[in-house]
Length: 163
Image (cartoon, rainbow, N blue to C red; front, side, top):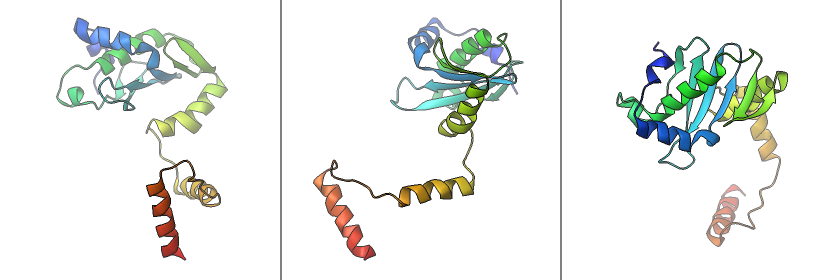
């Protein structure tokens, strides 16, 4: 396992890129780790999860193309910057985005464990949870009135196959 401190020195270009995206980084910190959800600058909607222990050991590095090619990426510099700022904070759970704290304590832990960990790809729902969420969806009828005519025709076609 490598140390996040390795990413303390990067080019000015990477530092500027990290600063540009600072406010869109979502994060969670507790007594053991700092977890970051960092946006891609080239692919809209794409994000990278990075997990760093409070000690500085990298648990889950960025998986962007630059990092995979062995280069220092701005995502890891961003992770270093947040880790540096959060490593000496109180040990209770905190969720935030940019410089803003959203949740603290049990509320932060619950929000991370029940929502963020799944949406950030750090945790998968159990088979039982997946079945229950699908049952909820199946029980409701979909409203396709706002969709294009082509999708409505497709729905009628599929409906004909099912009947």
